[in-house]
Amino acid sequence: MSDDSFSSEPISMLDAHRNTAKKAGMPPGSLIHVADFNEEDTRISVIDYGPIDIEEPSVETVEDLLKFREKDSITWVCLEGLKNVEITELIGKYFDIHPLVLEDILNTHQRPKFEEYDDYLYIVLKGLSLGEEEAEPGEFNVDYEQISILVLNDFVFTFKEWKDELFLPLIQRIRSSTGRIRTLGSDYLTYAILDTIIDQNFVLLDSMDERIDAIEEELLTDPTSDTLVSIQRLKRELINIRRSTSPQRELLSAILRSDHDLISEKIHIYFRDVFDHVLRISESVDSYRDMLAGLLDIYVSSVSNKMNEVMKILTVFASIFIPLTFIAGIYGMNFEYMPELRWKWSYPMIWVVFITLPAVLIIYFKKKKWL
Image 1: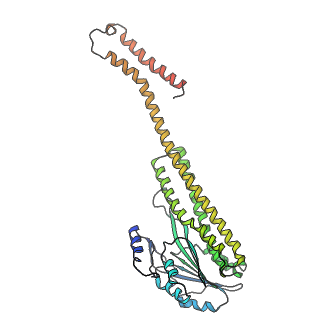
Image 2: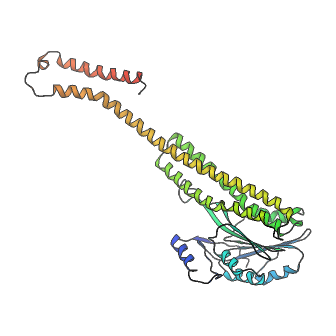
Image 3: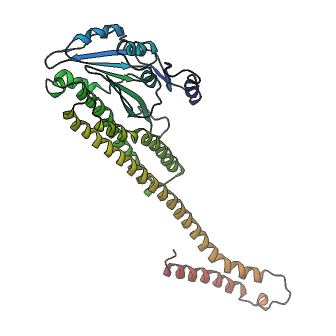
């Protein structure tokens, strides 16, 4: 199945819940594809390599993979698109994979984890990438893709939700290299795959850092209600990122603690390097969460300061006109005996008071630094 075309159409949250509900009441190990988008086809790509030779055959069926079991080489099988449940089922049949593992592969709502079996290892985690388009101006979109990895003695299977070029740099390394990656086993290939997936998070976090800097600059110049919306959206997306990346620490710790025969002792140092990357990502996510909380406080303070400035101006005007209103109210009363009303200079004198009093108050306010 080598059709390179790819079509992914998002579906509603209600449809996603309906897809998950399909499994309700079904026995364990029932193979139902559960995903949050629709896809058209499944593509199988294969790279079979050794220290000297490399082969990238065209594969149409799962049966075509069986011939590589007899070769003394490492075979990497990548499935992109999981809608064709039969392909996953046949892989489980020919390579003796437990039905519960196949069920987890097809259910794309798994928490990152690492599981050990007698003849293989199962790893599942989320691949994060920056969305190509923004749904709304200023919105930070992240695409979440579940990637499952089956590690056998001479085989590595990767199951991806959609077709992209995530593994293209790794494939280029395999094609052009006769060094470490071509001479080591499936455990090193597994390390390289995990490293590629996790390092994608650094690209995502760099973009988030730029977005946070832009929001911070906006807060210092002219914060608006749109600024608050951007902070809230970014904070919500960061929660989803943390939910996907935080369990990766536990996953890598489990791999480092493993004494399974499929993970040799000399490869542990490479998994420790990936673990360090996971720790850096986790720390960055936590720091961004604190920064967004600080930006939210700054926004609230900026709005309060702006309101205080407005209230200060209104208070100054009120302080100036209250005494003038008091004087005008006194002499606006309709008493018959008010001596000042018959005085020749009453009107000019009132204007002198009206002009002098605000001038004195303004000078006083400036001296007190209230203006």
